Image (tube, rainbow, N blue to C red; front, top):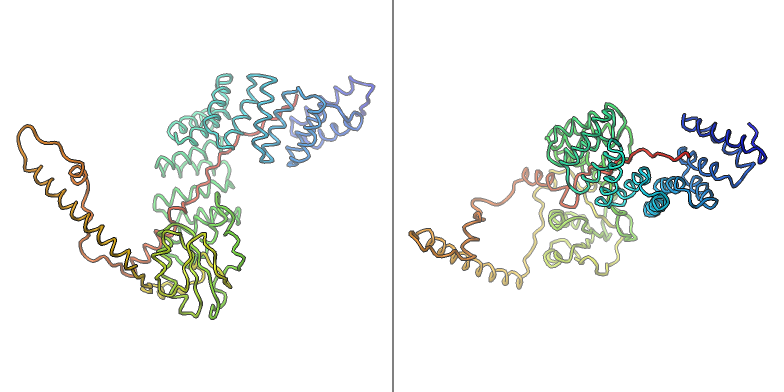
Length: 486
């Protein structure tokens, strides 16, 4: 169809034909018509706006942004174009600007359900769950059976930790649309969070029956199976996720933890290096300016920097291997948390111990993890370097312990007197008596040492540490974008 500036009826017919084709999913044909319109009329608002939506649908958000902003220069009071611009900005991960676009659309057309719905999506992405919940409630007041709004309401409630209420919303979505994979998937996340691990596995299975290549569902299914101590099945689930996406760091990391749990330390520690790339982690390291040593060559006559990576307990746990490195002829510099520097400053094999934040001596290599470089586990058990107590600090601690024991004995005597007392007018318990009566004994009886098997078991259980949780991909699954086609 030829489009002419002198034939407005012909122009309207061309645009209507293009919109129909776009709604049918025939994007290439619709794009050709919009392009012909713009060749004849470069500032035609509808063609600019609608061609921008096609570019976004075809994965070209940059070009979509250019076209829709050009349309808004022609007509800045078009709420539909502001909604479309917000969707494109959301795709470009510019969610604060997207939120401003949706707010602009609502200024021009208050109470618009689509603008409110997309605004809720942006608020969820920005982590403003309470504001998103308010926006979703406004949508549902206008359209009570809006399935995507109910899904977003569930996501907002889950983000606020209100998982039981979120489950009600997800069940409501499934009552309206039983084949909604996002509802099944997010329902599985909430079930996991309330401790219903078997039901979570069933929810992820429902997701995968609809979307077999849903890689995040395979990953989270593995987490639920691990919680049920079904580790072999969990490993199979992670393997399936990695078949779909080999570089999926969350599944790699969770599989490493599963391998460590069942005692496969060699493979588990090797795969544990994926932890730096998992969701929520900052960029690896802090730029020490030295290559990472992974055991490729001997360290004799080299200086190696070992720096703490996780919590205090992990640092103490793995500082035991410093003497092992020192015996290879390496000069070992240990960087640890400031709280541990006095304790580990007297560790055998450490040439220098530096508190984090202090200047570092020059080093040839660095390592934040000894796992890939360690010898077989049998060679490690029992090789624990002694940590010598600081004499002054030890004396102070002895004084504190002696004082605490005196106070404890006094509490016990007072508690016995209280238990012997009978009759009316019983005296009030003191704070120390209440504290003593309400706590369990912390005394230790019997040997306190750990054998080799116990050391290895503890190593597997503690490998994750408090700062290393299993990664459940809980990112909300957004509703499908609803483009404004005029």
